Picture 1 (cartoon, rainbow, N blue to C red):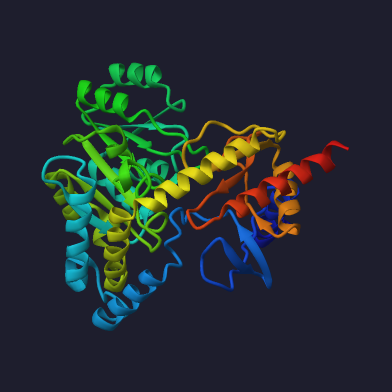
Picture 2: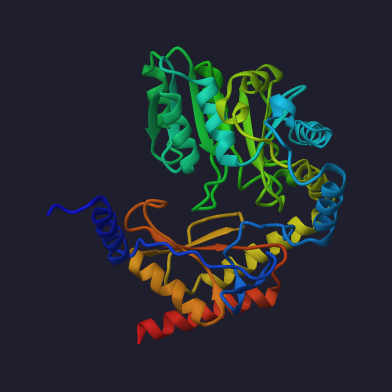
Length: 393
């Protein structure tokens, strides 16, 4: 008898497990933070994107409760039906003014960054157009390009010469350059000034996914402010569930670009709006990001402390000025083994494997937070050194 579909799926899962690519969820039994309870165990976590330590901040919990009391638990409909609340409108105005990607920008909020990137690329590009994308971009930029059905041209990470050559030979009606601002698995920055120069030279839009830069770089305003950039050519996407500590995302750009998304982007039009209580909480988060520079200073000190202590470890530590600190292990099984060794010592650092990263470049992704202490970082470094010493015996 031929194998059934269930048999085939089971075999594929078995192969994934054997190759070290099987993923398993862990269940948190406490609020997000540097110390969490996971599957009944107390752990020191370096697994979260909660870079400013706001996800468990009592001020945001209070704002969320206040927002729910005022606006209810849900939005009830999409933004264009009856789900656009005053809390959403207020947050959009505040975000546009804070990020300022161009003169007189508008902003549009989304339930997730994934939806926002699908919306940007599918609404602004089509069959006769081309999207030029860095190979290290997040999966949602790649999926947005595929959804757009445009020509999809990928270039090697931060290879400006290769991108320029591809732009110069393109016959596309409309061109979009799409890039992460901070690459999520490496922690380094895209050369946004050069990318904007190319966008201007080749009559293209520059789509910037600043999921891991918003709230951190440029005094919290993000990667554009870090480089001192502003242009009508920029379409900026920032997420609100990482440094901002809540959930959702936003796009900020020229008013005509934003209106185009509102009118035509299917991932915006055909989905229920995020609860207005979240927008209310995010307004409180934005005020903290804007006014509390000490959190960013604290985080910078922790990054420097970790990098100084990690120089003696046997794993490669690429240059990264951000809270994302990757330790390159190599093979997937070895990365999983290292992660599990730390877990046994009470420290949670996830192993990142293909296809998220290239084959042979599996790693531990250490994510630092302003809520970590010096002692937390020292404990992680000591545990890594202990594991390395045992491996070398």
